[in-house]
Image (cartoon, rainbow, N blue to C red; front, side):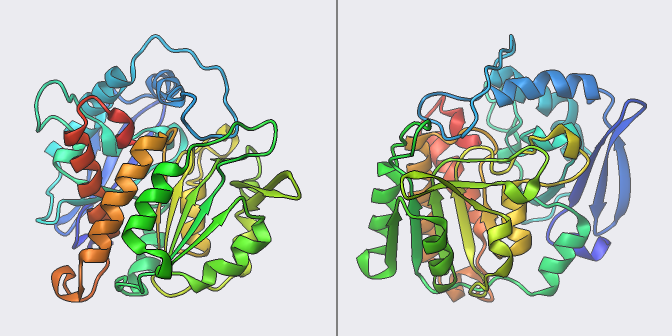
Length: 351
């Protein structure tokens, strides 16, 4: 297991009534760090804070009325104080700054990658110290490593957008992402499917190295196979589901960017012990690397981050990347931090 931590530590969050801790795996060994302030009760109360991160510009299918007396900023400070800061203080990081999170249950709804007291200073937050990724298990990480490092793929993009949604779902403003992606890839390397049916998308996915979904999405309670993205067929809602992806064969080193709400958040309490959500399912079944959103995706922020991300990925050749590796997590981390610094107070980008 320690061999898997050569590029950065693997941190598993365990939260129980009797005890909560973080199991940290590094090159040097395995250690347990107690997290007494992280309890099922406090997780439950703060989960409502992050679940309420919604506004008319954000993209989810279900919009439950959730109220909380705690602000998002206070929630991020709390998560930093009780979990992420103690973990980073007791964990030997590598020069890459990479860290892999394994979460389950209520902890799977927490944005550990974004935790911080941003008002206190530039070093009092997770993004200033680490480049985060989420994985479902150590076994899943080993499987990905055994396949070899992701190479720089061909610069081809499939863009799937749902600007107009069938009733009762509200329309989305995907203009930001359409313009950003068009500017980076150009017409000759881009296929834009606007308001497609699932069959058309599935037919085209294997032909492209990058697939960007700008649409509504949600995790469906009780049935992970029905988790998916809202498309349309003959004017009525039609989902592109996890089950639909099982039989398609993708290009090696394919990358999916799912710019929709709830794609990286566990929403079903009955499956709380399982690391099941849309982004991880996309990776397990099909794509080499997947970018998902944990809270509501803001239209303008989504477009700006996508533009910065794809510019970085397209500008990095084999020589600059080192061994031809496509470091998506690093490029995303840089894109988010650049946008955050350029847009003070816009914490939506941390999602």
